[in-house]
Amino acid sequence: MGMAAAPGTYMATIKPCISSSSKTHVSSVVNISTEHKEASWTRLASSSNISSRQPFLPRITSGPVKYEKFVTRAMSETNDYKPLSGLSIDLRGKRAFIAGVADDNGYGWAIAKSLAAAGAEILVGTWVPALNIFESSLRRGKFDESRVLPDGSLMEITKVYPMDAVYDCLEDVPEDVKTNKRYSGSSNWTVQEVVESVKNDFGCIDILVHSLANGPEVSKPLLETSRNGYLAALSASSYSFVSLLKHFLPIMNPGGASISLTYIASERIIPGYGGGMSSAKAALESDTHVLAFEAGRKHKVRVNTISAGPLRSRAAKAIGFIDMMIDYSLANAPLQKELSAEEVGNAAAFLVSPLSSAITGAVVYVDNGLNAMGVGVDSPTFANLDIPKDN
Image (cartoon, rainbow, N blue to C red; front, side):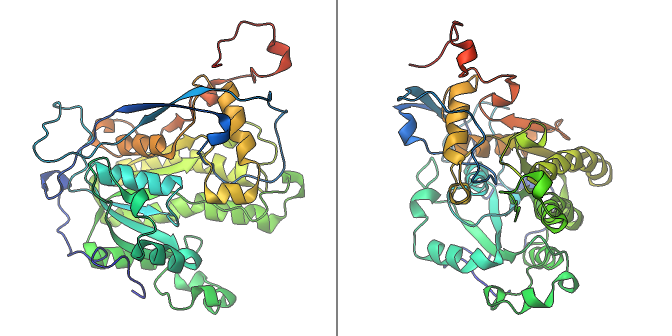
């Protein structure tokens, strides 16, 4: 490998590929707790998938709105804690590969933290151009505050792999990408090569997480999207999951699980979420159903996807109207509270745990219930209705 991660945390010995339930070298489990915190809309801290600069929602009623913030956390505990039998999320002895972690405030990072809090060993795949900054931030301790688990320990990332999930093998990589200075110094970063590296380093994994998407023309309406832009969105945002699962399945232990992240634009009209991204998310959800059947029958691996609400990630803030999306959700979702990345992470921990052993092929909504709404209740049309709301 042409890369390393934080000192003392990146390499681990190869472990035999046996049922991970018999391993007990990590001492942490998950329980659920809640915190209540009151804040105004001006203090929101959430994120989203790819969006656009174009506003797509009617003006939100002005003025501060108070709401209760409920945060559920995956709790890591010490050995002397005895969890309630059958109710804890215990991923001790499991090894997870999370594709698409490049900073400490997106859904990929949150999922990694929840899995680590439940006892899983964490491997991550980081987009090659972002690799140096990510590794440097880890080494210098810039992520230390974000790495803190509920028991006070720091999340350990055993190894970081350079990765570009758009390319299956080296032969697929165009010459201009091979010679691009952003890729210089890194090697073995195509999907096939990453899986081979993981196999050589660790032998097997139990959990695969797909947390990446890209739409180069996301700010364009669908009618203005080029063929290349449309296909690029599908390649990076949906087929990349098919490819990763296809290549990882041979080294995934039976009983393993895989999850991806989707968005409500797959089935509802979200003006501004363009460039073929809504189509890519729809494809991802359709593929989830088919892959659940094929991976389940052939490898005894479960496949689900989480339809997450908006989160104010760095990528989303750079694109544009994420604040408006969050405000709309707060005004119209059944649960009037901020959605945290942590809540999505905990849902992911449940979906890859034995507690969800009969759940596969599902689209699980983690969006405070916004997906269930047929209208926006903040509309003046409903001004005379007695609709409960936080004041």
